[in-house]
Amino acid sequence: MTKHALLIATALSLQPTAVLAAKATVVLYNEGKLARPAETVVIPFAAVREALPDLIFDQVIVRDAKGAIVPSQVTAMKHIHKGPAEYDDLIFQHELGGNDQRVTVTIESTRTPQPPFASKVRAAYVPERWDDFAWENDVVAHRAYGPALAEPLAGKDQMTSSGIDLWTKKVPYLVADRWYRKGHDGLHTDTGEGLDFYEVGRGRGVGGVGLWDGQQLAVSANWQTHHLYANGPVRAIFELTYDSWDAGNGVQVTERKRFIVDAGQQLDEVQSTFDFTPAAGSDGTLTVGIGLTEHPAAADVQVKTDASNKFMAIWEKYTDQPSHDELGTGIVLAPEAKLAGFARTTPPAKGRPDSLLLVKVKPGETIRYFAGGAWKPAGKITTAADWNVYLASKARRLATPIRVEINGVPLRSGVP
Image (cartoon, rainbow, N blue to C red; front, side):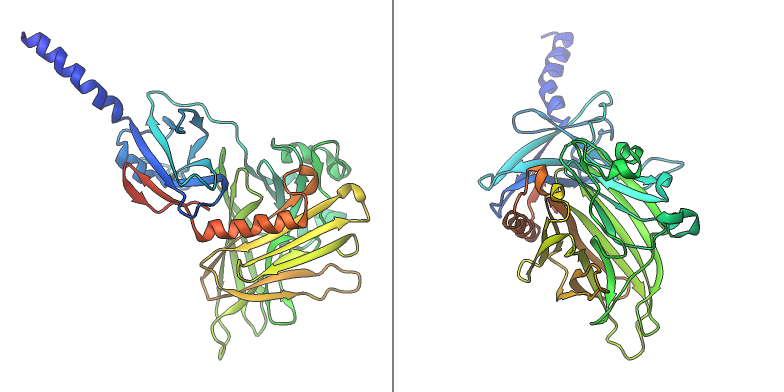
């Protein structure tokens, strides 16, 4: 064989290896044998880079076992003004049935940038509506009230509240930006996509918090700062901070709330961190009440608490406006958090009580929980029983997360 022919033969023999080097195999182990619709898989980008050293963040493709491209995103939570960028995670979703104990996907490095996928999540600061911060996925939408709303300039809209609002939707596409353009009356009218009818006021809404002394709930004012870290197509991440408020006994508390919003999920993950100096002679903790607002004047209300699965659910059948139909709201506590019981506020006459899920917290400690809702006209969850099953199933999935390997190397998945 000539030298030239030998070089060609050597190159051909190496070609399959070069192709394989541009792929990594990811195995998802569903050892809990649980059905996991829209399961979010989070792989540290550093681990992906170990398997694919030449990978560039916008030149990555995830494929399922049949070769179909799976929507994915790479997060860069920290903006680097000068120097190389820092990437955090590769995120994608995969549906697993109860019988799917082992599922394989591949990650590929491409030669050209890939166009972004259509997003199923969105988070945005909305200064046009007195500093709202709004977010949604393909099933439900929310908003939190900002500093401008608490100022006299807000006029008749002026309100001080750290409650979390909910907007009901029955379409999978993103609607919040368009709904804001409808104006007040349009926002409260269903023209086929859904509407805003949920009343928060000064209550906790869907997952707002306060400090519980056994009788009263001390709550913060409107959020003061916001920061957006990621914005789709699969996951949005943002933070809101709340200035100090009086929790009683001279204790001042501040809160930083991180929201993780995933496509296809009725519940958002919330990570609330509390900073305070404990009162002298106390046990060094405070009791946080995570709330769901009841609407007894407008609806028939069912409340369910489940200490074993650490969740609380409300299902309301609206009687004042039958077109509002039926709505479920719920909270699921993360497995590592210790449930301290349940409680209920006593509102003024004709007011709206909050059902509370209680957790003890130490200074600087973060409580992780999941909060959200489901509207009957959306067609996915249509009864109180369905809603309770959904929340219990979420609790079981959290307690038994999937296990992830990349090229045979075990990882701890960030599956929510």
